[in-house]
Image 1 (spheres, rainbow, N blue to C red):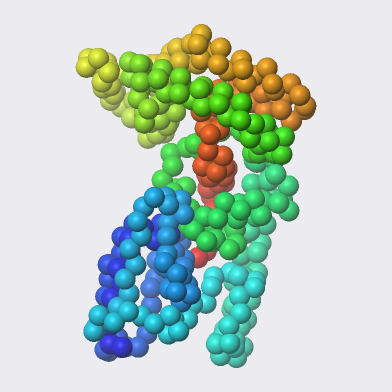
Image 2: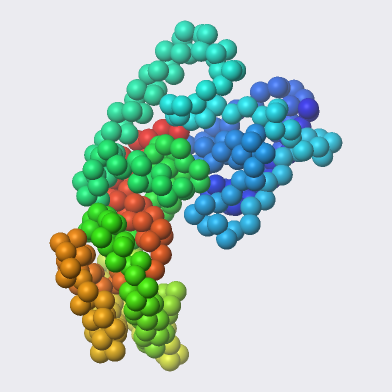
Length: 340
């Protein structure tokens, strides 16, 4: 084989990659990139190809993956000709790896790297446990149960979502303990058909109120505005006398000159929606059933303080992902320490 032509789209977070590797002058090609630049995702695609599977994007499963790997004669790469050394996998075994470990210097370097990874992993787990309320022993099991892009270890998960974490201006959801929402009592509560109906009724009414708002839309809620506000403030937008121009749904415009004005607008819009009499009446159908036990009472206190969470309860998996990403945003410096 003299060439390897790689074309990926929507494969484990790789939006698009179209590249040719030319082996005419060298049989080895090195790929170097900083942490979080999809090296592990690249390897995962080849792991799937070696097992005759089509790669995918598990965070955005509706996106159609494209995966073409061909030689200079347009022949598909044969799975038996692919060998991938999986990153940080205690259970990884291959008949070919012994060749690598025969070299004592390489083996020593290998052991040192993974010792460092273990220490950093422990620090991150400790912080995630504190933020989420989940015991350290269950953190990895809980995260891997989400099946994000075939992550086999928590470090796989960290590397995959690292660029997404860096792109976040602030946590999606703050000051929420994972264990208060995701426990047997609360999840069983929302499995009840009547509760599901009440929840859907609440969400439908909430979305209608959002559509009737002067500034908000279904895809641009007060949470989105809060994120924009945090980003602008963090980057000194208002401190140099810039102004923000918002278009009302009526077609008129309003100018925002300070962080305080934007925050007031957010609070007013949020208050008008969440205190709507019909919405509150629907919530009471849910609220009255939340006094059965301590777990449900703790959950009730949470949604009283953060009622915007209610509209997220119809998709537990996405809410779990957003919560873990929020916790990781709070420990962003530690994730930056995690090598590929």
